Image 1 (cartoon, helix red, strand yellow):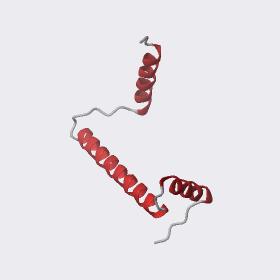
Image 2 (tube, one colour):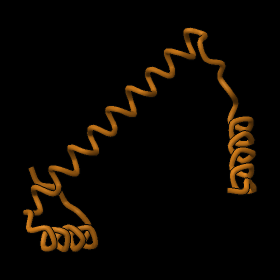
Image 3 (tube, one colour):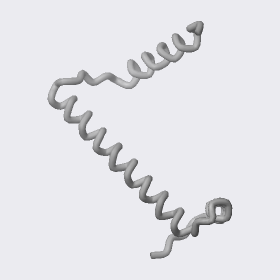
Length: 82
């Protein structure tokens, strides 16, 4: 299989290969394996959460309410004294 990447990405890959002594193909394979595992874990978590919502165990929240709560929590953390 052949994959085309941008010149900038290739330069970064070759620089990393030089620093680590690992062949570029090995670095790409490791990166792809890590990415694939992360995507799989995310999909499983989203499926689990959707199941919880559909089962009625979790009450859905609209985006505006969720972002408002996040902003409030963030502000509380910033104003807290250690």
